[in-house]
Image (cartoon, rainbow, N blue to C red; front, top):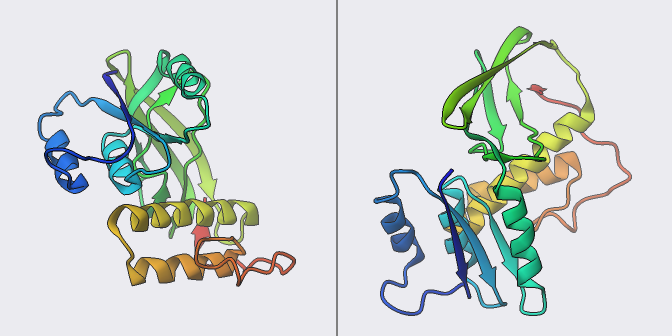
Length: 217
């Protein structure tokens, strides 16, 4: 698995300074494709730029303040990524799956756990496939089960809502404020009693969560 480690103080200061142009420029020659893991150091960072650079290459990003130990952070990172398990992951759901998170699916390294949540419209027996690459060879895992007609575990629905909120907030941070996305975050936060950057004053933790609408798995 090709990996680039990008250590930066977080702000482009010479040459091209537009983060979107830099990301576009990095994508064009990246045919391998290399994962660009970003480590922003300090308090003055262009977070949307680093987020976009990492996420667009299926990598991750981490932000370290000047009073934190960068060496320890990097040691933990290299201990993890030296043992890749599965890459280029994708799911085949069959009929009717939507709003699936995380999106895109990350690479997996030794010791990682992947929890995938989404919504569906049609209940019944399903065979879900997880496909990817291991040591350069394609692999496939099949999981069989039944999706219920209605109801389900409320905690799963809340986990799905939290993952969608995280995705929407990251989109707002990367691309700027969008009223439609903000309204969706507010709606999900109030319905599922999840604190968000836009609903902190609206959540009442001791109220029961809203009943499920549609189906979650």
